[in-house]
Structures are given as structure tokens and as C-alpha cells.
Image 1 (cartoon, rainbow, N blue to C red):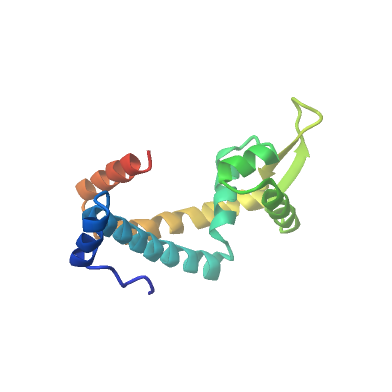
Image 2: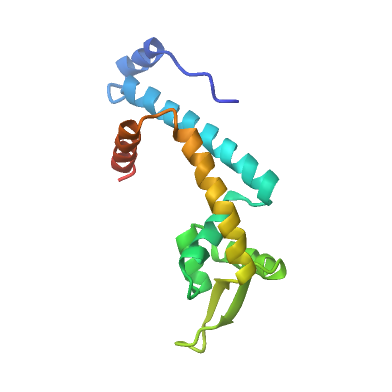
Length: 160
């Protein structure tokens, strides 16, 4: 896998002499976090694509819909899934075509629409999610439960 080349602490210390705000440990830590994220992302995405024909983005959208059993407005779906509204429009059209979602008039606001999973879409997620969570658990099994808890704390702290 790429991204295995890291600067040495000595190299970073040279830069820190010129720019004191450079912290070698911080740079090395962030590069390792990025490397680990790439490894995990690739391991998960490869399986999602090959076994389920799912992209990470489509899984995110379907997961939001899986949680929102009464449906959700397309604009809210885009916001929660972290994609643009144009992207959500295209994704929803394709998922409707594939029988995974349906779009209906919002009963509380007749001008709006709601997207929800169909029974087929829900069954699909019921098949995908256990395997997905098992794969994540296997990837994380190198860490003890205490280390996983600490990692969650640290990553939460890092991301604000």
C-alpha cells in the first residue's frame, strides 16, 4: 500500500529549527493516523464494492435512511450523509431504479418529499450491516477494548 514513506524524526527536527511551531511527534502521529485510515478504508471499501456493489457514499446514504424509518427530506439526507444535493438527487434516482428506495410526498408538508428505504432496501441493509460490523471488528481486534476506548477518546478529542 502507498504512503509508507515517512520523514524521520531527525528530518522533522531540522524543519523545526527553522519553524519552531513544527512538532515532529505531531507530524509523525498524523501521518500514522492517515496511513491507518487509508488501510482501513481500503480494506472496507474493497469488500463493499466487490460483495455488495456499494460505494462508501452509498452505504452512508443507505445507513441514514436505515435509521430514519419514516423517511427524510432529500436536502436533509444530503446534509446528514455529507454529500451535495446534486449527488443525493443522482444517488436517490439510481436507488429508486434499483428498488432500494422510494420517494413520496411528505405528509406534513405536501410541497416536500421524503426518501425512505423500501422493504428490499431494508433487507439489503440487514444483510450488509452485520458483515460490515464484523469486518470492522476484525480490523480493530489488534487493539484491546481499553485501547479501542482510548483511541475513540483521542480521535474524538482530535476532531473537536
